Image 1 (cartoon, rainbow, N blue to C red):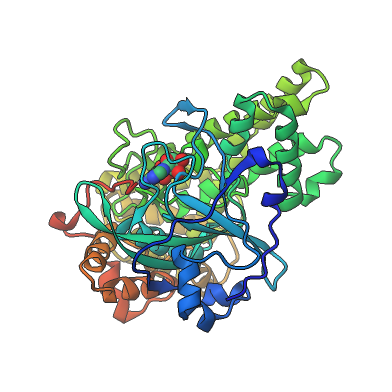
Image 2: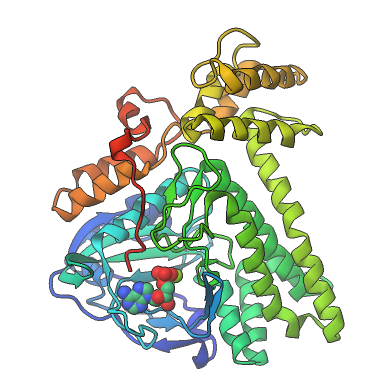
Length: 486
Ligand code: AMP
Ligand code: MG
């Protein structure tokens, strides 16, 4: 099995990481392989499925050209700074340049203890590995920037949490694994040299355009802020709740990363939280923009030594960049929700129209995904009855206003409805389905996982055979909490 690795991160100074190989496992077995992604990366599917390929995916063999390492990073977890986190259960094998010319990290997650493991065992179990696989691939299909799953391999070893669970390793593909927390790691050590090297690395890898800016580090900060604003707007547009928006889980490249207790919302409510460890609702659905803003302020702080020329000017530049976040988010959010509502033009009162819809959805407990999908059909008519939940009450009244707003644009109704069907998915990985699927997989039955994966990676069409995946949970099926799975 050959991987054409080209490892730029391993060329950074030694204090950016610790070099070590994954820890081998007793009984590797391939659970899932993402063939489409393998091909996109230029990897041979058959070779990955063969014993030598599986050995790499389970951490039992280090392929030629790999330079395995655990990355150092710090982070603010639930608002509290931890100066050293790092890859405690992950190994970066190396980087691939895909046939498209794009560079990707290949990382094993759950690959054994590292110098950053603290009290952890360095392992993951099958449930969270398959959750990350499913939700990441669903996000990708929904057009949301995200890390992706190349493979899931069972280890044949138990992992001990509250009970013994089947161990697994996820092979994760990312544009990079540099996080806000990577900058915080060097900032906390007053290592200005490393900060500069990291910033230059990130510019070269992710933001090459800012190199020509008058102030490249300020332009870098602004570019990262722009991508986070876009990302969180897209999360809100599909009803996604990350669950652990700590700065160590915030990708500098603007991808969704570290799927832990994440979930999609069923009934719309901005205070929705699933994570069992988020008691204050810090990372609730509607709080995510504020948290991204806060996380970006932590990034800005780390960049102060690079922003100069004087400290006062650096602070002023950082503040200006951070203050621009709410406006940038608002624009991205309005764009995303205009697409959902079939609005091609921007009008002054659109924010109010969107806000009134969401308020009525919250009051009536409307299902977020099915509610927006129902509007695709309602957009075909200028009046008359609209499908549930828009038949009567506050939502019925809102549809009348919305149709009046649509009438102010010249768009063709069929084209509008088709555009809306590309902005309002028919299916999402509903949490009760995800949980049931993972439970079956842990019992050895992978068929429900494979079917759910097929459904959520094909989210835009109305397929009768997917109907049961569109149903919100019955009261007894509602999942109250999701767990980090660490
Ligand atoms: P997470 O909440 O998964 O983003 O992880 C936060 C930190 O804890 C990171 O430094 C992880 O590497 C580390 N960590 C999480 N789970 C484990 C584990 N089972 N063993 C060792 N380190 C872990
Ligand atoms: Mg993490």
